[in-house]
Image (tube, rainbow, N blue to C red; front, side, top):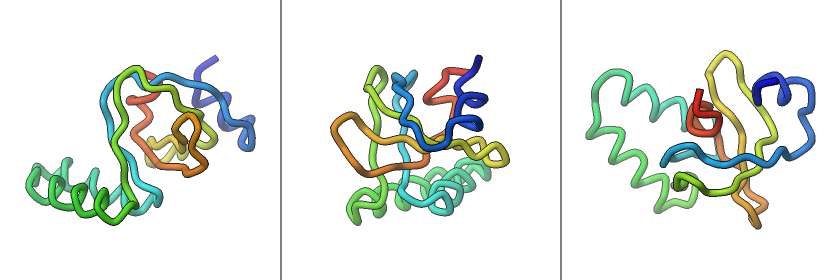
Length: 102
């Protein structure tokens, strides 16, 4: 069973996962989608600036490949997974492929 199927069935439990690649995420789904839109349109400068501002403001963070996280939600229409870092109580939306590797 894939992570996405589990998350649609178990929305309140934190499921342990390991980041499959270096990634970034933001507290709000809207911010994550906005930054992903910059990448999709090929505007890497806008993405870098937006992510840097988000990290400085504390609304975005970076994840390292191999880092342990807990997944608690999935947004099938945006391909995002809601995760928190081990030992942290703050959740971030990240690209699902960064978590599942698929």
